[in-house]
Image 1 (cartoon, rainbow, N blue to C red):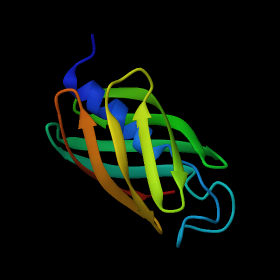
Image 2: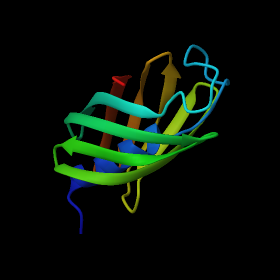
Image 3: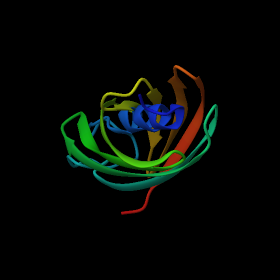
Length: 124
C-alpha cells in the first residue's frame, strides 16, 4: 500500500504527462515542446516540491516524477490537448488537471486523501 503522498505524486505525474504539438499556445510549434525537465510545487492535502522529466509523442507524455514528500521517484503518463493538460502516476490514485501557457503550467490535483493545487515551470 502506497502512502498518501505517493498517491499525490502519482496523480501529479499524470497531469503533467499530456502531450501536444502546435495546439499549445505559447509553448512552441514543434513536436516535443513539453519534453524536458519541469520543476514545481504542490499544496493542499499534501505539500512539497517535484521535478518532472517528460518525453512527448504527439499528445501523449511519459516520464518520471521525483517528489519531496513523500520522497520518491515514480513513472507518469498523461496527455495535453491545446492548453489543457492531465496526468497521473502509474498505479496511483491521484489525478492532475490544469493548463499550460508558454513555459509554465498549473492546476489542481485529486487523491483519495484530498486535493490541492500544483504549479510548474520548464527548466530545460
